Amino acid sequence: MKPHIDSVRFGAITVAGQTIKHDIVIALDGRVKKRKKDLSKRQYGTSHVISLAEMAATWEAGADTLIVGAGLFGRVRLATETQAYLAQRGCAVELHPLRRAVRRWNKSTGKTIGLFHISC
Image (cartoon, rainbow, N blue to C red; front, side, top):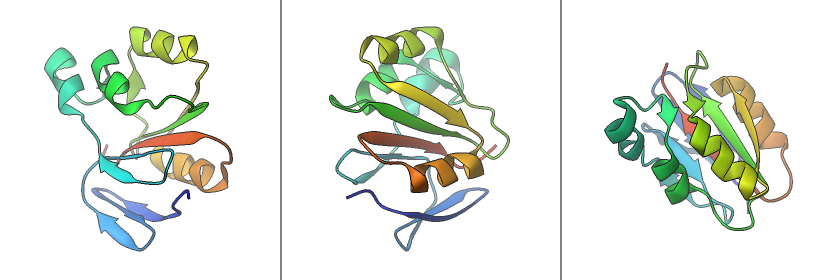
């Protein structure tokens, strides 16, 4: 079951009543996991560009939509090869500033996964 995101603020996101102080990924089964942003940092020197390696560790077979909370100011983006990877798998991408991404997540239906960057 898809968990509801209750609120966000710089450096924290509250999911189903639990406040988390790191970036997260929400899986198809509703599990909330820590984002593996080190995979992107190794390649690009920042977690603001989502690498192919990070997405390969995040994406799940059967997911048809990925909602990305790109930080409060929308600074996160997907690398070109990451976009191609998702397109090849038939997974649509919605990239929004964090608060808009949370609204989209809470209204979403279907086989959706989420990745939320909780700072900048």
